[in-house]
Amino acid sequence: MQNDKKHLTDKIFAPPLGDMNAADFRRAGYEMIDWIARYFERLEDLPVLSNNQPDDLKNALPQSAPKDGEDFQTIFGDLEKLILPAVTHWNHPNFHGLFSTSTSAAGIFGEMLAATFDMKAMLWRTAPASTELEEVVLDWLRQMMNLDTGFKGIIYDTASVSTLHAIAAARENLNLKIRENGMSGRDDLPLLRVYTSEQSHSSVEKAVILLGLGQKSLRKIATNERFEMDTKLLREAIEEDKQNGYLPFCVVATVGTTSTTSVDPIEEIAEICEKHTLWLHVDAAYAGSAAIVPELQSCLKGCERADSLVTNPHKWLFTPFDLSVLYCRHLDLLKQAFSLVPEYLKTTETVMNQMDYGIQLGRRFRALKLWFVIRYFGQSGLIERIREHCRLAKLLADWIEASDDWELLAPIPFALVCFRACPKTVENLDALNEKIMNSINATGKAYISHTKLNDKFTLRVSVGSLRIEERHIEKLWNLLKEKLAEIK
Ligand code: PLP
Image (spheres, rainbow, N blue to C red):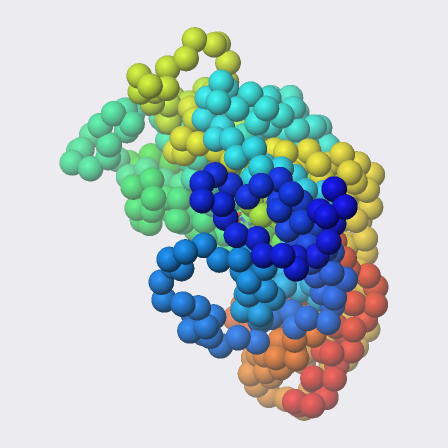
Protein backbone atom coordinates (compact mmCIF):
# COMPACT_ATOMS: atom_id res chain seq x y z
CA MET A 1 0.00 0.00 0.00
CA GLN A 2 2.84 2.37 0.85
CA ASN A 3 4.12 1.98 -2.66
CA ASP A 4 0.75 3.11 -4.00
CA LYS A 5 1.16 6.63 -2.67
CA LYS A 6 4.45 7.51 -4.31
CA HIS A 7 4.42 9.70 -7.39
CA LEU A 8 4.57 8.27 -10.85
CA THR A 9 8.28 7.66 -11.07
CA ASP A 10 7.89 4.09 -12.30
CA LYS A 11 6.40 3.81 -15.71
CA ILE A 12 2.85 2.59 -16.04
CA PHE A 13 2.27 0.67 -19.25
CA ALA A 14 -0.76 -1.37 -20.21
CA PRO A 15 -0.28 -5.10 -19.53
CA PRO A 16 -0.30 -7.45 -22.54
CA LEU A 17 -3.94 -8.26 -21.84
CA GLY A 18 -6.61 -6.82 -19.56
CA ASP A 19 -6.55 -3.42 -17.89
CA MET A 20 -4.25 -1.47 -15.57
CA ASN A 21 -3.65 -3.37 -12.35
CA ALA A 22 -5.02 -2.10 -9.04
CA ALA A 23 -1.67 -0.87 -7.71
CA ASP A 24 -0.98 1.21 -10.83
CA PHE A 25 -4.57 2.44 -10.84
CA ARG A 26 -4.13 3.71 -7.31
CA ARG A 27 -0.86 5.46 -8.09
CA ALA A 28 -2.17 7.10 -11.25
CA GLY A 29 -5.46 7.86 -9.52
CA TYR A 30 -3.86 9.66 -6.57
CA GLU A 31 -1.76 11.68 -9.00
CA MET A 32 -4.82 12.53 -11.03
CA ILE A 33 -6.81 13.67 -7.99
CA ASP A 34 -3.84 15.77 -6.91
CA TRP A 35 -3.74 17.34 -10.36
CA ILE A 36 -7.45 18.15 -10.26
CA ALA A 37 -7.13 19.67 -6.77
CA ARG A 38 -4.19 21.80 -7.95
CA TYR A 39 -6.16 22.80 -11.03
CA PHE A 40 -8.91 24.28 -8.89
CA GLU A 41 -6.31 25.99 -6.66
CA ARG A 42 -4.63 27.75 -9.61
CA LEU A 43 -7.76 28.29 -11.70
CA GLU A 44 -7.86 32.04 -11.14
CA ASP A 45 -4.34 32.41 -12.53
CA LEU A 46 -5.21 30.68 -15.79
CA PRO A 47 -6.57 32.74 -18.71
CA VAL A 48 -10.35 32.31 -18.81
CA LEU A 49 -10.39 31.98 -22.58
CA SER A 50 -7.77 29.78 -24.18
CA ASN A 51 -5.02 31.80 -25.86
CA ASN A 52 -4.69 29.14 -28.54
CA GLN A 53 -5.22 29.99 -32.19
CA PRO A 54 -7.32 27.66 -34.36
CA ASP A 55 -5.42 24.46 -35.21
CA ASP A 56 -2.70 25.00 -32.56
CA LEU A 57 -3.72 21.86 -30.72
CA LYS A 58 -4.32 19.83 -33.87
CA ASN A 59 -0.86 20.72 -35.14
CA ALA A 60 0.73 19.73 -31.85
CA LEU A 61 -0.77 16.23 -31.93
CA PRO A 62 0.44 13.21 -33.91
CA GLN A 63 -1.62 12.52 -37.00
CA SER A 64 -2.20 8.88 -36.15
CA ALA A 65 -2.69 6.84 -33.02
CA PRO A 66 0.37 5.31 -31.27
CA LYS A 67 1.09 1.78 -32.43
CA ASP A 68 2.05 0.59 -28.98
CA GLY A 69 0.66 1.73 -25.67
CA GLU A 70 2.39 4.68 -24.02
CA ASP A 71 3.50 5.24 -20.46
CA PHE A 72 0.68 6.77 -18.45
CA GLN A 73 2.97 9.51 -17.15
CA THR A 74 3.74 10.64 -20.69
CA ILE A 75 0.06 10.81 -21.55
CA PHE A 76 -0.68 12.67 -18.34
CA GLY A 77 2.21 15.07 -19.00
CA ASP A 78 0.67 15.99 -22.36
CA LEU A 79 -2.52 16.94 -20.58
CA GLU A 80 -0.69 19.81 -18.90
CA LYS A 81 1.49 20.63 -21.91
CA LEU A 82 -0.95 20.35 -24.82
CA ILE A 83 -4.50 20.09 -23.63
CA LEU A 84 -4.60 22.62 -20.80
CA PRO A 85 -3.58 25.59 -23.00
CA ALA A 86 -6.48 24.71 -25.31
CA VAL A 87 -9.02 24.76 -22.47
CA THR A 88 -11.45 27.61 -21.94
CA HIS A 89 -12.08 27.54 -18.22
CA TRP A 90 -15.81 27.39 -17.64
CA ASN A 91 -15.09 26.91 -13.94
CA HIS A 92 -13.18 30.20 -13.65
CA PRO A 93 -15.02 32.56 -11.30
CA ASN A 94 -14.79 35.32 -13.92
CA PHE A 95 -16.36 33.23 -16.68
CA HIS A 96 -19.42 35.41 -17.33
CA GLY A 97 -20.12 34.59 -20.97
CA LEU A 98 -23.14 32.73 -22.34
CA PHE A 99 -24.39 31.19 -19.12
CA SER A 100 -21.79 30.86 -16.41
CA THR A 101 -21.98 27.22 -15.37
CA SER A 102 -19.56 25.23 -13.27
CA THR A 103 -18.92 21.85 -11.83
CA SER A 104 -18.41 20.79 -8.22
CA ALA A 105 -16.27 18.26 -6.39
CA ALA A 106 -19.33 16.16 -5.58
CA GLY A 107 -20.38 16.22 -9.22
CA ILE A 108 -16.90 15.22 -10.38
CA PHE A 109 -16.91 12.23 -8.04
CA GLY A 110 -20.36 11.23 -9.25
CA GLU A 111 -19.12 11.43 -12.84
CA MET A 112 -16.05 9.33 -12.04
CA LEU A 113 -18.18 6.65 -10.45
CA ALA A 114 -20.59 6.65 -13.39
CA ALA A 115 -17.61 6.04 -15.68
CA THR A 116 -16.49 3.31 -13.31
CA PHE A 117 -19.75 1.40 -13.50
CA ASP A 118 -20.10 2.24 -17.18
CA MET A 119 -23.64 0.94 -17.22
CA LYS A 120 -25.90 1.41 -20.20
CA ALA A 121 -29.31 2.17 -18.80
CA MET A 122 -31.53 0.80 -21.49
CA LEU A 123 -33.52 -1.85 -19.69
CA TRP A 124 -34.18 -1.89 -15.95
CA ARG A 125 -32.37 -5.23 -15.94
CA THR A 126 -29.22 -3.70 -17.41
CA ALA A 127 -29.22 -0.82 -14.95
CA PRO A 128 -31.55 -1.02 -11.95
CA ALA A 129 -29.39 1.51 -10.10
CA SER A 130 -29.63 4.16 -12.80
CA THR A 131 -33.31 3.56 -13.49
CA GLU A 132 -34.40 3.77 -9.87
CA LEU A 133 -31.98 6.45 -8.66
CA GLU A 134 -33.04 8.65 -11.57
CA GLU A 135 -36.69 8.32 -10.60
CA VAL A 136 -35.99 9.17 -6.97
CA VAL A 137 -33.56 12.04 -7.55
CA LEU A 138 -35.78 13.65 -10.17
CA ASP A 139 -38.66 13.47 -7.74
CA TRP A 140 -36.48 15.23 -5.12
CA LEU A 141 -35.69 17.94 -7.65
CA ARG A 142 -39.36 18.22 -8.61
CA GLN A 143 -40.22 18.85 -4.99
CA MET A 144 -37.36 21.33 -4.61
CA MET A 145 -38.74 23.27 -7.58
CA ASN A 146 -42.24 23.04 -6.11
CA LEU A 147 -43.62 21.36 -9.21
CA ASP A 148 -46.72 19.24 -8.74
CA THR A 149 -46.75 15.45 -8.56
CA GLY A 150 -48.22 15.15 -12.06
CA PHE A 151 -44.74 15.71 -13.48
CA LYS A 152 -42.51 12.66 -13.94
CA GLY A 153 -38.91 13.26 -14.89
CA ILE A 154 -36.50 11.70 -17.31
CA ILE A 155 -32.88 12.64 -17.95
CA TYR A 156 -31.47 13.47 -21.37
CA ASP A 157 -28.11 14.96 -22.21
CA THR A 158 -29.12 18.51 -23.10
CA ALA A 159 -32.10 20.84 -23.16
CA SER A 160 -32.04 20.70 -26.93
CA VAL A 161 -32.72 16.97 -26.77
CA SER A 162 -35.30 17.34 -23.98
CA THR A 163 -37.24 19.89 -26.03
CA LEU A 164 -37.01 17.69 -29.12
CA HIS A 165 -38.59 14.83 -27.17
CA ALA A 166 -41.28 17.10 -25.71
CA ILE A 167 -42.34 18.30 -29.17
CA ALA A 168 -42.25 14.71 -30.43
CA ALA A 169 -44.64 13.73 -27.63
CA ALA A 170 -46.86 16.71 -28.46
CA ARG A 171 -46.97 15.56 -32.08
CA GLU A 172 -47.77 12.00 -31.05
CA ASN A 173 -50.66 13.41 -29.06
CA LEU A 174 -52.28 14.52 -32.32
CA ASN A 175 -53.01 10.91 -33.29
CA LEU A 176 -52.06 11.54 -36.89
CA LYS A 177 -50.18 8.27 -37.27
CA ILE A 178 -46.97 10.17 -38.00
CA ARG A 179 -44.95 7.49 -36.26
CA GLU A 180 -46.27 4.91 -38.69
CA ASN A 181 -46.75 6.88 -41.90
CA GLY A 182 -44.36 9.80 -41.53
CA MET A 183 -45.21 13.22 -42.89
CA SER A 184 -43.91 13.20 -46.41
CA GLY A 185 -46.14 12.37 -49.35
CA ARG A 186 -49.32 12.87 -47.32
CA ASP A 187 -52.04 15.26 -48.50
CA ASP A 188 -54.18 14.49 -45.48
CA LEU A 189 -51.87 16.55 -43.21
CA PRO A 190 -52.33 20.28 -42.83
CA LEU A 191 -49.37 22.50 -41.88
CA LEU A 192 -48.65 21.73 -38.24
CA ARG A 193 -47.78 24.78 -36.15
CA VAL A 194 -45.52 25.31 -33.14
CA TYR A 195 -45.39 28.74 -31.48
CA THR A 196 -42.56 30.24 -29.53
CA SER A 197 -41.30 33.73 -28.84
CA GLU A 198 -38.69 35.42 -30.97
CA GLN A 199 -36.48 35.35 -27.85
CA SER A 200 -36.65 31.58 -27.45
CA HIS A 201 -33.60 29.36 -27.80
CA SER A 202 -32.54 28.09 -31.22
CA SER A 203 -33.02 24.53 -29.94
CA VAL A 204 -36.78 24.94 -30.52
CA GLU A 205 -36.22 25.65 -34.20
CA LYS A 206 -33.70 22.82 -34.47
CA ALA A 207 -36.27 20.46 -32.95
CA VAL A 208 -38.90 21.30 -35.56
CA ILE A 209 -36.29 20.82 -38.27
CA LEU A 210 -35.29 17.42 -36.90
CA LEU A 211 -38.88 16.29 -36.43
CA GLY A 212 -39.53 16.90 -40.11
CA LEU A 213 -42.03 19.65 -39.37
CA GLY A 214 -39.90 22.17 -41.22
CA GLN A 215 -38.95 25.69 -40.21
CA LYS A 216 -42.14 27.03 -41.72
CA SER A 217 -44.10 25.20 -39.05
CA LEU A 218 -42.53 27.42 -36.39
CA ARG A 219 -44.25 30.74 -35.79
CA LYS A 220 -42.20 33.17 -33.76
CA ILE A 221 -44.20 35.57 -31.66
CA ALA A 222 -42.90 39.06 -30.94
CA THR A 223 -42.09 40.08 -27.38
CA ASN A 224 -42.94 43.14 -25.30
CA GLU A 225 -40.48 45.72 -23.97
CA ARG A 226 -39.45 43.26 -21.24
CA PHE A 227 -38.65 40.59 -23.88
CA GLU A 228 -41.61 38.42 -22.78
CA MET A 229 -43.91 36.75 -25.28
CA ASP A 230 -46.80 39.03 -26.27
CA THR A 231 -49.82 36.85 -25.55
CA LYS A 232 -52.21 39.00 -27.55
CA LEU A 233 -50.10 38.28 -30.62
CA LEU A 234 -49.97 34.59 -29.73
CA ARG A 235 -53.76 34.45 -29.51
CA GLU A 236 -54.14 36.22 -32.84
CA ALA A 237 -51.55 34.00 -34.54
CA ILE A 238 -53.30 30.81 -33.44
CA GLU A 239 -56.68 32.08 -34.54
CA GLU A 240 -55.34 33.22 -37.89
CA ASP A 241 -53.63 29.86 -38.46
CA LYS A 242 -56.81 27.97 -37.65
CA GLN A 243 -58.76 30.09 -40.12
CA ASN A 244 -56.16 29.22 -42.74
CA GLY A 245 -56.67 25.52 -42.10
CA TYR A 246 -53.38 24.98 -40.28
CA LEU A 247 -53.09 22.77 -37.23
CA PRO A 248 -51.63 24.51 -34.14
CA PHE A 249 -50.45 21.86 -31.67
CA CYS A 250 -47.71 23.17 -29.39
CA VAL A 251 -46.44 26.31 -27.68
CA VAL A 252 -42.91 26.49 -26.29
CA ALA A 253 -42.71 29.18 -23.62
CA THR A 254 -39.48 30.17 -21.88
CA VAL A 255 -38.69 30.85 -18.25
CA GLY A 256 -35.28 32.47 -18.47
CA THR A 257 -34.58 33.27 -22.13
CA THR A 258 -31.00 33.01 -23.32
CA SER A 259 -30.46 36.65 -24.26
CA THR A 260 -31.98 38.33 -21.20
CA THR A 261 -33.49 35.61 -18.91
CA SER A 262 -36.94 37.11 -19.45
CA VAL A 263 -39.90 35.05 -18.31
CA ASP A 264 -42.84 34.48 -20.62
CA PRO A 265 -46.27 34.92 -18.97
CA ILE A 266 -46.88 31.22 -18.43
CA GLU A 267 -50.32 31.54 -16.85
CA GLU A 268 -51.72 33.51 -19.78
CA ILE A 269 -50.05 31.17 -22.26
CA ALA A 270 -51.46 28.15 -20.41
CA GLU A 271 -54.92 29.67 -20.68
CA ILE A 272 -54.53 30.03 -24.46
CA CYS A 273 -53.19 26.47 -24.75
CA GLU A 274 -56.13 25.10 -22.80
CA LYS A 275 -58.61 26.99 -24.97
CA HIS A 276 -57.12 25.59 -28.18
CA THR A 277 -55.99 22.22 -26.76
CA LEU A 278 -52.32 22.84 -27.44
CA TRP A 279 -49.38 21.19 -25.70
CA LEU A 280 -47.49 23.65 -23.50
CA HIS A 281 -43.78 22.97 -23.17
CA VAL A 282 -41.78 25.26 -20.88
CA ASP A 283 -38.09 25.80 -21.53
CA ALA A 284 -36.66 26.54 -18.10
CA ALA A 285 -33.23 25.19 -19.05
CA TYR A 286 -31.46 28.03 -17.27
CA ALA A 287 -33.92 29.41 -14.73
CA GLY A 288 -35.57 26.20 -13.56
CA SER A 289 -32.85 25.84 -10.94
CA ALA A 290 -33.76 29.25 -9.52
CA ALA A 291 -37.17 27.83 -8.61
CA ILE A 292 -35.58 26.00 -5.69
CA VAL A 293 -35.12 29.42 -4.03
CA PRO A 294 -38.36 30.28 -2.19
CA GLU A 295 -38.42 33.95 -3.23
CA LEU A 296 -37.81 33.01 -6.89
CA GLN A 297 -40.24 30.09 -7.01
CA SER A 298 -42.98 32.22 -8.57
CA CYS A 299 -41.04 32.19 -11.87
CA LEU A 300 -42.66 28.81 -12.54
CA LYS A 301 -46.18 30.00 -11.71
CA GLY A 302 -48.52 28.56 -14.28
CA CYS A 303 -46.38 25.48 -14.92
CA GLU A 304 -48.94 23.42 -13.04
CA ARG A 305 -50.87 23.77 -16.31
CA ALA A 306 -47.94 22.91 -18.60
CA ASP A 307 -47.57 19.52 -20.26
CA SER A 308 -43.80 19.42 -20.07
CA LEU A 309 -40.87 21.42 -18.75
CA VAL A 310 -37.13 21.19 -19.22
CA THR A 311 -34.54 22.27 -16.70
CA ASN A 312 -30.75 21.81 -16.83
CA PRO A 313 -28.97 20.99 -13.57
CA HIS A 314 -25.77 21.24 -15.63
CA LYS A 315 -26.45 24.94 -15.97
CA TRP A 316 -27.07 26.25 -12.47
CA LEU A 317 -26.97 23.30 -10.08
CA PHE A 318 -23.20 22.69 -10.15
CA THR A 319 -23.59 19.34 -11.88
CA PRO A 320 -20.99 18.49 -14.52
CA PHE A 321 -22.19 18.68 -18.10
CA ASP A 322 -24.32 16.95 -19.24
CA LEU A 323 -27.59 16.51 -17.41
CA SER A 324 -30.91 17.88 -18.59
CA VAL A 325 -34.24 16.91 -17.05
CA LEU A 326 -37.51 16.71 -18.93
CA TYR A 327 -40.54 16.75 -16.66
CA CYS A 328 -43.58 15.50 -18.48
CA ARG A 329 -47.17 14.75 -17.52
CA HIS A 330 -47.59 12.21 -20.30
CA LEU A 331 -44.65 9.82 -20.27
CA ASP A 332 -47.04 7.37 -21.94
CA LEU A 333 -47.03 9.58 -25.04
CA LEU A 334 -43.25 9.70 -25.08
CA LYS A 335 -43.28 5.93 -24.88
CA GLN A 336 -45.87 5.71 -27.63
CA ALA A 337 -43.66 7.92 -29.81
CA PHE A 338 -40.39 6.10 -29.20
CA SER A 339 -40.77 2.59 -27.85
CA LEU A 340 -39.54 -0.11 -30.21
CA VAL A 341 -38.47 -3.38 -28.62
CA PRO A 342 -36.56 -5.92 -30.72
CA GLU A 343 -36.54 -9.54 -29.62
CA TYR A 344 -33.10 -9.35 -28.03
CA LEU A 345 -34.26 -6.59 -25.69
CA LYS A 346 -37.47 -8.25 -24.51
CA THR A 347 -37.61 -8.87 -20.75
CA THR A 348 -40.27 -10.06 -18.38
CA GLU A 349 -40.20 -7.52 -15.53
CA THR A 350 -43.02 -4.99 -15.39
CA VAL A 351 -40.75 -2.04 -14.84
CA MET A 352 -39.70 1.20 -16.45
CA ASN A 353 -37.23 0.52 -19.24
CA GLN A 354 -35.70 3.88 -20.02
CA MET A 355 -34.89 3.01 -23.62
CA ASP A 356 -38.64 3.30 -24.27
CA TYR A 357 -38.66 7.06 -23.68
CA GLY A 358 -36.37 8.43 -26.31
CA ILE A 359 -34.22 8.00 -29.34
CA GLN A 360 -31.22 6.58 -27.46
CA LEU A 361 -30.97 2.95 -26.54
CA GLY A 362 -28.30 3.12 -23.84
CA ARG A 363 -28.09 6.01 -21.41
CA ARG A 364 -25.33 7.10 -19.08
CA PHE A 365 -25.76 6.86 -15.31
CA ARG A 366 -26.25 10.61 -15.00
CA ALA A 367 -28.50 10.58 -11.94
CA LEU A 368 -25.53 9.57 -9.79
CA LYS A 369 -23.76 12.93 -10.07
CA LEU A 370 -26.95 14.87 -9.34
CA TRP A 371 -27.56 12.66 -6.30
CA PHE A 372 -24.05 13.42 -5.04
CA VAL A 373 -24.51 17.16 -5.65
CA ILE A 374 -27.90 17.43 -3.95
CA ARG A 375 -26.78 15.38 -0.95
CA TYR A 376 -23.46 17.17 -0.54
CA PHE A 377 -24.81 20.74 -0.69
CA GLY A 378 -28.28 19.96 0.62
CA GLN A 379 -31.25 22.03 -0.48
CA SER A 380 -30.13 24.91 1.73
CA GLY A 381 -26.60 24.95 0.34
CA LEU A 382 -27.88 25.07 -3.24
CA ILE A 383 -30.42 27.77 -2.40
CA GLU A 384 -27.76 29.95 -0.74
CA ARG A 385 -25.44 29.71 -3.72
CA ILE A 386 -28.10 30.68 -6.26
CA ARG A 387 -29.29 33.47 -3.95
CA GLU A 388 -25.72 34.79 -3.73
CA HIS A 389 -25.37 34.78 -7.51
CA CYS A 390 -28.54 36.85 -7.82
CA ARG A 391 -27.21 39.26 -5.16
CA LEU A 392 -23.90 39.69 -6.99
CA ALA A 393 -25.67 40.30 -10.31
CA LYS A 394 -27.86 42.96 -8.66
CA LEU A 395 -24.75 44.54 -7.17
CA LEU A 396 -23.20 44.94 -10.60
CA ALA A 397 -26.52 46.27 -11.89
CA ASP A 398 -26.58 48.86 -9.07
CA TRP A 399 -23.11 50.10 -10.02
CA ILE A 400 -24.17 50.30 -13.67
CA GLU A 401 -27.31 52.22 -12.81
CA ALA A 402 -25.43 54.65 -10.62
CA SER A 403 -22.97 55.52 -13.40
CA ASP A 404 -23.67 58.05 -16.18
CA ASP A 405 -21.41 56.15 -18.56
CA TRP A 406 -23.36 52.87 -18.46
CA GLU A 407 -26.95 51.73 -18.81
CA LEU A 408 -28.96 48.59 -18.21
CA LEU A 409 -30.76 47.23 -21.26
CA ALA A 410 -33.04 44.60 -19.72
CA PRO A 411 -34.66 43.71 -16.39
CA ILE A 412 -32.74 41.28 -14.17
CA PRO A 413 -35.05 38.52 -12.92
CA PHE A 414 -32.17 36.19 -11.99
CA ALA A 415 -28.38 36.55 -12.27
CA LEU A 416 -27.76 37.88 -15.77
CA VAL A 417 -27.03 41.54 -16.43
CA CYS A 418 -27.57 43.04 -19.91
CA PHE A 419 -26.07 46.49 -20.33
CA ARG A 420 -23.79 48.72 -22.37
CA ALA A 421 -21.44 51.62 -22.07
CA CYS A 422 -23.13 54.83 -23.26
CA PRO A 423 -20.80 57.77 -22.71
CA LYS A 424 -22.25 60.93 -24.23
CA THR A 425 -19.03 61.66 -26.12
CA VAL A 426 -19.19 58.49 -28.26
CA GLU A 427 -21.49 58.19 -31.25
CA ASN A 428 -21.06 54.60 -32.36
CA LEU A 429 -22.00 52.74 -29.21
CA ASP A 430 -22.19 49.34 -30.91
CA ALA A 431 -18.58 49.57 -32.02
CA LEU A 432 -17.51 50.88 -28.62
CA ASN A 433 -19.16 48.04 -26.71
CA GLU A 434 -17.87 45.40 -29.05
CA LYS A 435 -14.36 46.74 -28.51
CA ILE A 436 -14.83 46.75 -24.74
CA MET A 437 -15.96 43.12 -24.84
CA ASN A 438 -13.10 42.00 -27.06
CA SER A 439 -10.47 43.83 -25.06
CA ILE A 440 -11.72 42.41 -21.77
CA ASN A 441 -11.75 38.91 -23.24
CA ALA A 442 -8.23 39.39 -24.59
CA THR A 443 -6.90 40.08 -21.08
CA GLY A 444 -7.66 36.52 -20.00
CA LYS A 445 -8.93 37.94 -16.72
CA ALA A 446 -12.62 37.61 -17.51
CA TYR A 447 -14.94 36.42 -20.24
CA ILE A 448 -18.13 38.26 -21.15
CA SER A 449 -20.36 37.74 -24.18
CA HIS A 450 -22.99 39.74 -26.03
CA THR A 451 -26.42 39.76 -27.58
CA LYS A 452 -28.48 42.23 -29.58
CA LEU A 453 -31.46 43.88 -27.92
CA ASN A 454 -33.63 46.36 -29.81
CA ASP A 455 -30.83 46.43 -32.35
CA LYS A 456 -28.28 47.54 -29.77
CA PHE A 457 -25.05 45.64 -29.18
CA THR A 458 -25.54 44.49 -25.61
CA LEU A 459 -22.99 43.15 -23.15
CA ARG A 460 -24.09 40.13 -21.11
CA VAL A 461 -22.61 39.23 -17.73
CA SER A 462 -23.83 35.97 -16.30
CA VAL A 463 -23.10 35.23 -12.64
CA GLY A 464 -23.21 31.53 -11.92
CA SER A 465 -19.84 30.17 -10.96
CA LEU A 466 -19.69 28.05 -7.86
CA ARG A 467 -16.39 29.77 -7.04
CA ILE A 468 -17.46 33.39 -7.45
CA GLU A 469 -17.07 35.91 -4.65
CA GLU A 470 -17.85 39.62 -4.45
CA ARG A 471 -14.23 40.48 -5.26
CA HIS A 472 -14.61 38.86 -8.69
CA ILE A 473 -17.55 41.10 -9.54
CA GLU A 474 -15.55 44.11 -8.33
CA LYS A 475 -12.67 42.99 -10.52
CA LEU A 476 -14.97 42.77 -13.53
CA TRP A 477 -16.52 46.18 -12.88
CA ASN A 478 -13.04 47.73 -12.61
CA LEU A 479 -12.03 46.04 -15.86
CA LEU A 480 -15.13 47.38 -17.61
CA LYS A 481 -14.42 50.92 -16.42
CA GLU A 482 -10.74 50.65 -17.29
CA LYS A 483 -11.44 49.44 -20.82
CA LEU A 484 -14.06 52.13 -21.38
CA ALA A 485 -11.59 54.81 -20.30
CA GLU A 486 -8.94 53.35 -22.63
CA ILE A 487 -11.18 53.00 -25.67
CA LYS A 488 -13.55 55.99 -25.64
N1 PLP B 1 -32.82 26.71 -23.66
C1 PLP B 1 -32.29 27.82 -23.11
C2 PLP B 1 -33.20 28.86 -22.54
C3 PLP B 1 -30.90 28.00 -23.09
O1 PLP B 1 -30.38 29.12 -22.58
C4 PLP B 1 -30.08 26.98 -23.63
C5 PLP B 1 -28.62 27.12 -23.61
O2 PLP B 1 -28.06 28.05 -23.09
C6 PLP B 1 -30.68 25.85 -24.18
C7 PLP B 1 -32.05 25.75 -24.18
C8 PLP B 1 -29.86 24.74 -24.79
O3 PLP B 1 -29.19 24.07 -23.79
P1 PLP B 1 -28.39 22.70 -24.08
O4 PLP B 1 -26.98 23.10 -24.34
O5 PLP B 1 -28.55 21.91 -22.82
O6 PLP B 1 -29.03 22.05 -25.25
